[in-house]
Image (cartoon, rainbow, N blue to C red; front, side):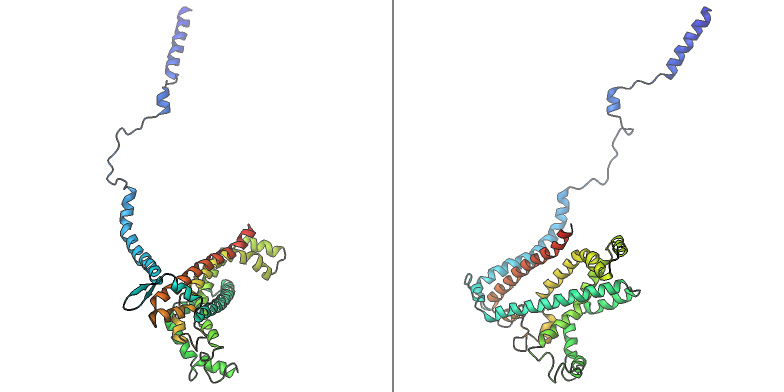
Length: 332
């Protein structure tokens, strides 16, 4: 009886020893050791952050030289009476003369008229063409065709339309004359029609840019919102103004800003077509700036006009951003 009990006790002790949990220290549990005792050698150590700045420094210096240096030199030049032989410091005299310059003020009026007509027609036609192209099975071919005028250089486009407007052999002149809109004189020769002629050239060339940007915006319009609105009985026109147009505001802002700045800068086709004429009917402010600075070589006065144009462009650009942000804020 004693042997059996002692045997069973020894068996329990052996089982306890075999199946007991291994004791771990708190330090080992808190900080387990890595299996690799030594860190391998790194043949590509991480580079310091200033190394990348050193790589970009030459490009930054070149960009600063070709952009900031002319800008500050333009400011200095606007405070001087610069001629070919030298310059004389006159302070703000070049700026004060602008307020009494009738051609400067008229240039602003013509520029506003030109920009409003161009932007209004381009945005309206561009969005309409984008909606038509987006719902067409020939979208790829239509986009390719629309890109062709935009790929043409502005000076070449102006020369092309100069031939089309020609009073002797111009096809567009013959078409307008046959329709009774024009007489024998060219459309570019009339002070009442020349502005519309150059606006038509700008609309023809740059409406495709608005169309492509608006077409990209149409691709991101949520389909579920359109379908839910159609289920509720909304007409396609109401669907456009309630769903599609609010989603187009961000991309339209980009398109309008691009064309707005281009209208204030590009005068290539205008110089080819009219050169500011007839008389001063199409002499918008950039054309007047070109004449003052590079025809009459009044570089100080031209610099003052250029800085005034730059300042107004920035202010109007910010105003456009606020106008296009209001519908977004109201929507939110």
